[in-house]
Length: 453
Image (tube, rainbow, N blue to C red; front, top):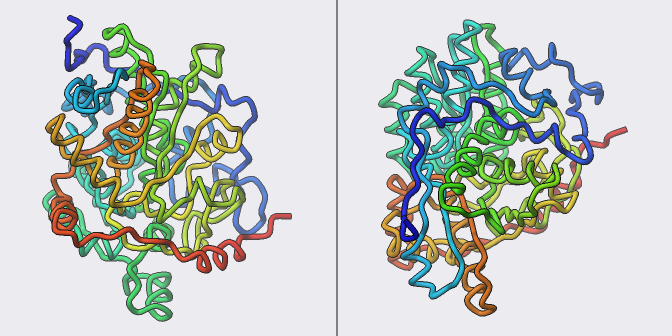
């Protein structure tokens, strides 16, 4: 079986527990702070926007957290997802490296985001929540939560970053097909949105702005909660099903990764593939190099500051210690909309600060070129976000070709690009360009970081 291409697990091997990296950190996370008092926030204070089940996971330090059976039951529609050996890509690159990828594009919504959307919808339904507000960048999270809302009978309201709202009409159509309402952000439906439009009428929006709008509405009604698609501990926890499955599948392949690679915007899909392997390392197991790849036009990990900051633009959210470009920073409108976030997950940021993961960035054109190179070899067109991981994989495989090292590389192909074909059309037509972030705008945004006593 040494020519095997795909490694499949049957449903009985679907993980029964999520992995919580908080249990194995060599130094605990800095606490989340209340934006008013700057004191560690309490579970009761978070209940304004989150259900209790999610809050318990957010604050937990238990290594394993049981996955509810109703969540696993829905997951069985597409999980366990396949692990592929990229043999044709290896051949095309003439590399001795072994390349494996976990393919999350098999979910009904087309990405890894459904893993957490189903879980969060379940916990909200269990507590009688009638409506969930959220934000979305490229639309993958909004699509996934819309799907989850229809399965659990919950109304979904999505604020979609305006530049992506205009770039990706089929993502909007997907959400609406499942009964969700999708609004371009910034909008005139919230105070925070109107404030942005008053100052910047032509604003392309940002995830920080969209979060503000969604949180503002969630706090106004008792029957409404807010759901986030990345960044927070409980979201990263839900995504570890990816890496836990990959561990079993790599055993089938008699392999173990030398490096694990994922793209990073908020951190969810990188954490999903990397955290279980990092946990093994932290408990004395094999060393693994974990590479977090971000866009050079929004270089949160590579150029940001490790500090307390708001997760949103209007400063309605708690304060988290994270790598940030400043909550008021609006990234340029490149096509990987899911990576246009000013901050990074506290857990991912913490690991980067400890030197346990290696961040790097690439520009837009190089990532699209890598995505097409991958597609021509493997037959899957990646989402623009996933192209960043693909670019790093090809870079590392080419290094192996030069050195002769036969490293084993695992990466998360976090979603397909079927709703992103206009971006590929623009790239192939020479209409895309590499976009630079404005350093003066980042400097201004960082100058406005909250002063923590």
